[in-house]
Length: 517
Image (cartoon, rainbow, N blue to C red):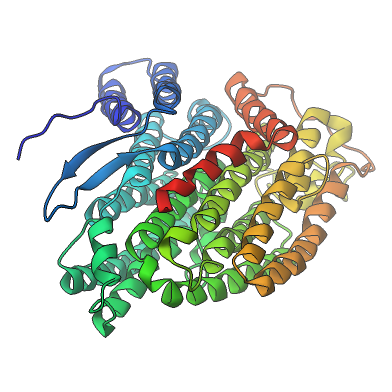
């Protein structure tokens, strides 16, 4: 059946897809390509964001079919979709700007220009499509489009054995989890005869919908999505992968890849499996507590900046699951508030996490040791230069030599902890605690409170080091690339804005309640 395509509705994904192809061709044929490729990539992300802005307040759907009196759509654009797409695009824009310096660096192992941009844009295209997907086939394909380029991104530094090991770990765990997810989708299809989520919801909510096959399908389908956000028990790839990958790739995985997984999880459970909330709700609630607790406790022991942020990312994956766990046993039309709370937390977490990762990327790159250096901070010798090892001790006294970097990193850390002046993180915690209490899961709110206190220890320990004078510190060369400075500035400005005006996110995300009504 032929149908017209609403090109405005698919513009964010279409712009990224066309830019992906353009970057590939430019990389092949343009001799001076680094700046051009960056300009095309950043321009595409900005254009896609503009398209999201144009679509705001103009809900529409495309790729719809009708049958049995029930119209079903595979690609839907509404406020919920646009909030998620906005998070993905802002994260992609910041990472693209950050990574420019890594593709033209003279002292660090360069990332290949074309491949880096091509893979990031391809993965982001999958994330944008996933946010609008409304059938299991679209969601599975989009999830794979997010994941496959990410494997290659992790292993882009071909001469690095650690990168190769990180990429292999990521690949193996992902393949296993997505295989389990596809098996679950096949069981759901066998039990319902449908792939569109609205049709699945109708069948599963019927008198004959409660079967063992359908239950197994529901649980297995969620496996791939749980892996994507790095939740227990699929968390163990996160610290090794983040630590082995280039810092900008770790930043990408911590925000864009996680956003894609959360989008898929919210859409699938909210639109396809509401009748089974008594099955997936308790399961997600338990995973939320295990994930946040393990992430925070493991982060307490870390002395590496990247590994600390990696375990912090695991902990925040647990926080993101809390509102979904609180939806247990409620009717599908009544847990929109819990779903929107997850999206709100994701948006607030994304910008403050990017601020922290951005500074770590800039400082690590700017402080490369000279040839023959060990790569670690020489504290005993009277200097404390941040090297590739990235120990948090290496950041001692950063405020005295690089105040702008210390302020930006300090703001990101206290925001992740939920403390002033970074109260964007506090608003995020309040949102999920309120969702847990409103959903009748007060024990989840208690777990969040306890884990927040644990998180304060390692966030504040690192923050205090930034403003603790070192015996002597060799200043970094003030050659921070403009693109990196702009990237950190965007993330920092967004974090400050959301600390002052959290309704910029909470309002639009709250409006997405209608999606589940």
